[in-house]
Image (tube, rainbow, N blue to C red; front, side):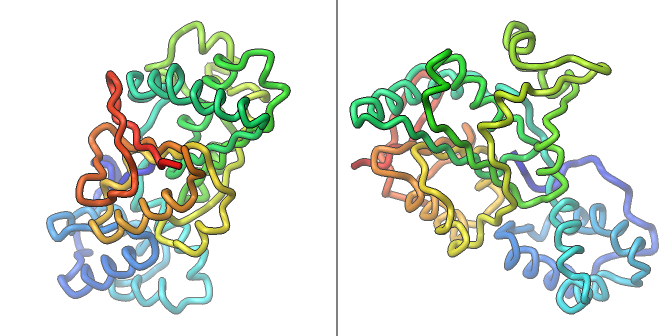
Length: 293
């Protein structure tokens, strides 16, 4: 899932340092635009990740870069590059297997059965912070594993959202190295991927179930336009928000979910002191959050 700042990256230019005032300006701007909060002790990461952008734009300081982001005619293009610079996308297929097992064996089967009882074959899942596509494609594989041939009779769509357009472009291609598949069972790789040129491409049957879109979790009005979901995945994302933004984002998930829907968050994340709207359900290996009817 998209997450803030990897340890890797280009070394900052020796003669380019961010002042306290510039750091505050950039931190506040990034927070306003994305909801990502950068703590004071991460100032060096601003230098590490953004100094190359400043150099490429022939600017002289972080202050000039902040001005550029606010007022230049090309500021919208630069925002895309800013988001790509300040987020990293460390993920893999079948990440956190115990949680996914709960999804496949318990939650998905329950949601599908509830829909069958309502004589509905329409299922919507939202993957928020989808990164380079490993999570939503994993979910499509699990849907195929559960529904098998019956999947052809269903109207299924996974709305996969991320802040970064370059990341989404990679997700749409659906081509991965063996490292991205390091936690994936061998039989699943053989069944759902095409191996060519030492890379693995997700099969078209999986691609067609996913709708990749650029979106900002801090844009509450924009999120209201998203089709409502039966299940929401947002794993390893809200940990990078402050409490106010966490409450706003989780409220958006609650509003988006249909009654009886489920929210999955990262195993190290919690809704404690963030939301009382969900009923936590404890399963072996995972806590899942239910929006009661």
